[in-house]
Image (tube, rainbow, N blue to C red; front, side, top):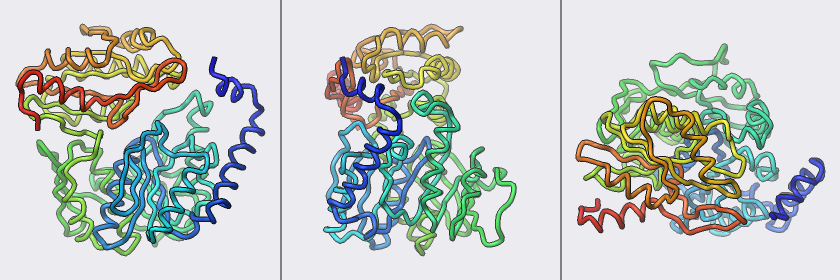
Length: 426
């Protein structure tokens, strides 16, 4: 029995709130209010947060600034970086304030933080003086945990409400107006020029950053902002939004488009985010784990011969999405392999059957062992196929029953299998 989980379920909400708030307060006092000594930029939303954090960091560094950043992928303080192995995007228990104190001690000017709804719900953003906050997009996630989509959205709202200086918002998102209406000294919206803004009204001094002349090529993205042409070596239209968000942050800090361009055109991939592991055959790993993310990933891949490997998280998380994931895979994939992801204390086979219930007119494979599922995908792949493995991305653990964590890496398994088959690893 998971005692920690049982206590959480039995404790009244106000006591849990007091506990989490108290931890944030003690943390900031113990580490001497580090969140007030940096220019802190927070990135929130459902998708694209980690990539946007990475892009912002690169732009600031290209501008000569010293930067610390924290995301689900990594921790970084200036040149020192290490993997986030916590299975927690926004750490608690004093860890975030300890990280910020280390950044202050290393004389960083900026801290760029990925901010989650769970983190906000547990007051992990408290006592951090956010200068700028970014809204990437919003789609259903963590619905059981928050008790509904509106509650989930409201947690994001709290971050914007607490930030009075600069708000940067994806104004093509259906929820844009909700965040735009929160007062701030400066508002910056971003979107593709061909898209309609979801805003009903904007103030006269609002800034809108638009990507024009967009081209999606085989291994990258081309677009123009004003008179500056960007050539980004990343796949997927959704990465245009991530770059726009980061460019908007750069402009808000007085950084030129030319410096933004120079920084972003150096990017050759983000660990676990549309990461090309092999080019022959083409094998990609990605963190996509919500229906919207999965569809965006599948739509962005070349050709129609997709071999997909995916699952869905257990632990009672967003059970509603499981058959939806299956339905999306049926729509886009030639070969479908459903496998284990992070079952926690749920029966993994039951999770996989729930995913399969969304598939009505296509054959599929259920393979419990994720390593065997990846091997099967590689076995099914031909020269014209693309193998796409989603759900884990850069994660280094698989969470199973009894609170256990098993060391894991989709990328390393792929690498081993390709070497065993004497295929060139790229």
